[in-house]
Length: 176
Image (cartoon, rainbow, N blue to C red):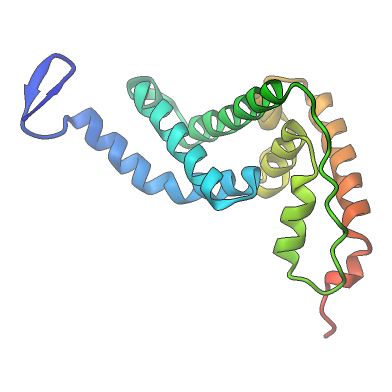
């Protein structure tokens, strides 16, 4: 028998069950977004778990929202950015990692993830939300609490950096 919110229960409450249903239904999509943000499986699992824990703490409010998936993605993204800021503060100085250029012919996914890893966390989050999750500029700006012009300019600069890093597009296309 477990104690939940000051009452005894033999099983999970209706609120917990609906959270469990939501978590099962959305965990793969949240994990995929987390993986694109973090760049490695362990960090992505941790980020997804942390975001789901935060969502569970406020489940009554989340479940009443019009779009719980969007709320969850916002929590995931903001958690990622907060953790990155915290790590940077702990290091006191940020030195860019010199990632060697990828040779022609590697798997595009690996190459793209390496290039994404070179972007600053906030710019990376904007690119992932804007182009991978296919959110509008307005939605990205709202989720990251910034102006639409910031999203546009950061995405433009980030895409330019990615193009520079990845080289000519024809290298990644296969002949017919």
